[in-house]
Length: 590
Image (cartoon, rainbow, N blue to C red; front, side):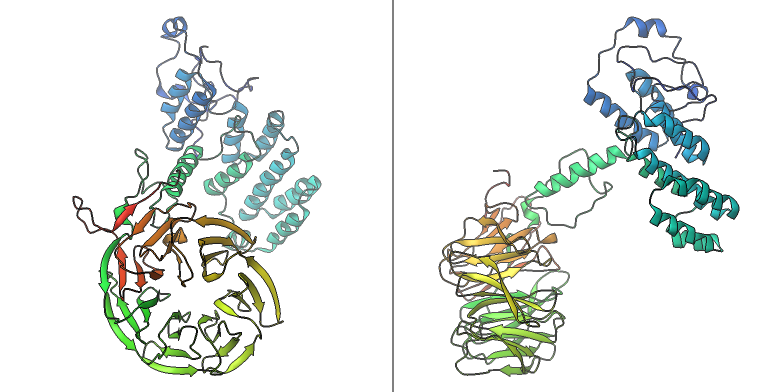
């Protein structure tokens, strides 16, 4: 980092941080400007003494603290761009100082590798710190850099002297000192840099060191590094967080955004518009689910078939790939294996069978039924893809392999919906007691996790495993934190009676929630807002299930008793034409 000129003689620190506004900040060439950074030969600027009569007669307006902060932030940013003369002029004219002169000296000595002088500067800075004990930590960091640079230069004796006579007597972080002593065994500089995870002697490592040292100094003495960029980044991230329709990958950088306007996403970029209506089923469609890789959609119907649809990667249009037949009672639930090789289909309450299909070949691998008295209405895959759990409301709860062989069973659990936790051992099951419990098949233990006051008709879990989305009879959609075991939010708008309706997480970072409804609509909420941000119309009967594509955040599908699957996407590129089927609702702040 440039030090804004090196100057000749080091000035004594002034007793106060910044010049008083309204006082002249003129100084002789070669001295320290009011920004606290040294300048050589006045950096080519006009002498501040020549128009002294003008500046002294005009009383400057006293700046507020926030004005001074902004000027310092701008100055730091300009200094980082190498516009040092501009910084000098800004500080002189404003009567502010970029940083304390003692901090400037310290910065210059660190960047030049003058470690003895930098240590001496610490004594001067000590009086300006909120925590004088931090001097020991700062000294440790300085000596560590000094030690590593000696080692890289091959000055083993000097490095050993720093270790024994300077670092060790500090009696600070002895564990780190043991690690540092091990670096003496590095025979080559490359080995040292690799083992120490250090950039090596020079500007990069010293700048990184300064960033660490600054954390011990008050910002009034030395600004945190790149503070203006940090504030702008926070502002952009906050605007994105508050944007109801933001559904693209989060980019923490500032290069791809405009700082001149507020961030806002159009609803037309959101999957609120009907792109396709799939009418190949000839009866109620009870379930639909995108594959984990987002390339396929499976839909299950009362017409006894499962249809596999292929998603075109460019147009995002769906085309019928194959039909899986023979599910005598209809198909009310589907589950893709983790690698999307297999698909399991379950039927309604009176169905005692389960079908395991090979999606690639279209062949039935397993048709499982333990007893004609069973009711196998729900299924979940173990993360290893070699086992699955299934169950129903008649008290069956099984763990099986791919051939349908029974591995474990849990008696007396009337299962409504299932989910396998990522640890590979725990299974979450909602039951007829209006709760979700965790069952460990290895040590045969179980525990209560969620307790509702009404029947839990279905639930799904976020990718992180932290949140669960429940469709609760007569109540609607509830969001639970599984780790803290607390109800986070109740979403409004949806009509939920005693039909089984399946909701889902969706969008980038799973920021959104979508659910079907008995009023024929699809509701979409931002995860943090109880009121819906969109209501999608088009279906003519109850919407049983909604699935959001896990790879293409602008693609969503819904299955309905009207016998159709609707595919939702962004608006067509017609700015003047408003597409029917969308009612925009509330902002997140309302």
